[in-house]
Length: 229
Image (cartoon, rainbow, N blue to C red; front, side, top):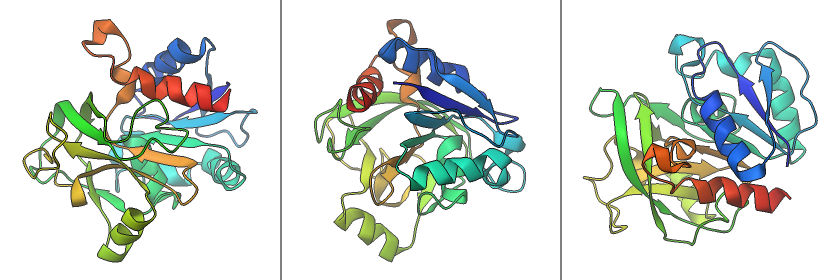
């Protein structure tokens, strides 16, 4: 499996996700600068975390109009899987590839700690490494991670099984206390209509090596590699 990672001015998690992909695939991902207009052949396109364009104007808003995003949209429309993590999730919503928006955390503070997530479905190439309802622990690092969408959109996501992950407690219970950033219905990640685009706020790439203190994110990447092999 060949992955391509898009790098913007302000990206800071591209190496983390490249390391995670290499651990699972045994193959070095390619980097593509946001100002380029062409993408190499890729089985997976990744938009990593960070602060693209310094989060000026609105998180992900400027990055969504970078030259490379025209090609990302075209590849996504033709079925190439696209993954956006944290700032990448923000970029995907701003680009119209995913519904909803990411607002400031309800605490109005930057969050940097581990959270528990419940896997809402294993029926996707992104979540096939897990069991439905499995609870995993991964880090978050964001200020604008509060997922918002109108009720009609949220109902559609629920009805079509397009919620990928929810914030939960260690037992898998969906509670208000576990929802630190205030996301609607505890949503931590969503798919597009075909489940070929995924955006999530937490960082599974930073839970793929024992030295990181947890490896709950490794099945995420193992599953993607197996699904795209």
